[in-house]
Image (cartoon, rainbow, N blue to C red; front, top):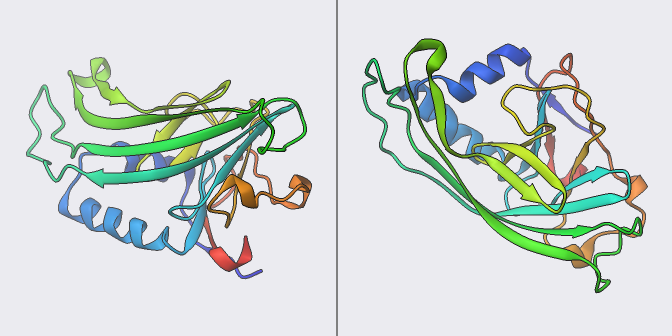
Length: 206
């Protein structure tokens, strides 16, 4: 398996996700979108499947599959003020399906499914009193996980939290749940790992 590695410390990744969106950061976002068209991304505290592919979420008997149907940038970044970060508004929509009987069979009638919309608005407030506006919580069956633009799904429900909650994530090459193999154990599952460096895995190697 060929994996391209980037030495990006965990703290640096968090800063890239929350700092005001400068022209340089906007270019980096565009580059990231292009990279995710052909690669999965594995971060210390989050995972993204290639664009249009399923990401699987597992804990105990519960397993969910999520795919992002759309994401886009607001292109509304502005110069920040004392009360407003000026960050660009970011959007995404997703669909999910969940199987909780331990079978991993998404063709059975007892699956649950749904969809959701996400939005990250500029920070508001001063200093430590600043807060992130919008909705960055992905809901997939019993799972509630934090979202980073464009398609990164965290192991946790809060920003920057990489504690071991028992949740596992697996990026796949599959487009539909009808393609999901009966042998989910053959997939590469990732746990939260603050010591892991960011890696990009080619679509053909998933």
